[in-house]
Image (cartoon, rainbow, N blue to C red; front, side):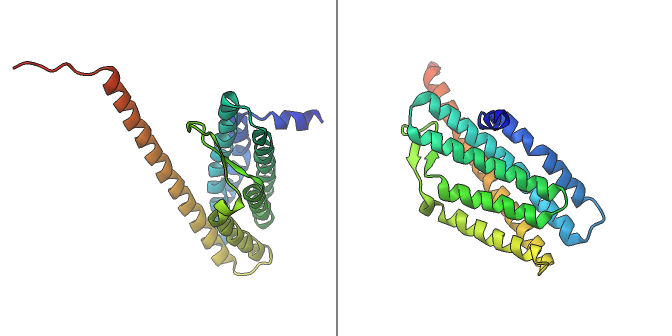
Length: 210
């Protein structure tokens, strides 16, 4: 019970760090002389592990920030959903790192599907209304992608079309990571512009006379 309690008080930094051993194991598999579909899938899962580690840190950090601003009963449920999802992902990545790529991938995707079905809110710590309703219908595109990836995982377990499965999941991982990266860059630019605007307002330049 004490271990469960410790997990339920998981810090954002620790949550992200817990993904790293499995990520290292998957990268190790990607460099070993396995058949190329196995190596490609291991590489795809390692990319996913880094992204999910980042998302775990962000989600937990957002929960902390919003909880400091307001008291909302929905936060507790969302926090539990996030932590259970992280637990499922850690289990899945660990299974994959142990060499069972298909089963590990299936556990990861079941956890993601569960999160997108169970999470009923979205957190925006900087917004005027930091807790916003967001049911599964608002995540339909993500759920569809997760369902496709889960189908690919089942095909891998059944040892069907493994080359196509590995290629498809690698493409999904790269495209997903690229979309997230572009979103982070756009957000960073927006934040920089806001900072410059605030600085200009606080320190206006006096006009110079010729």
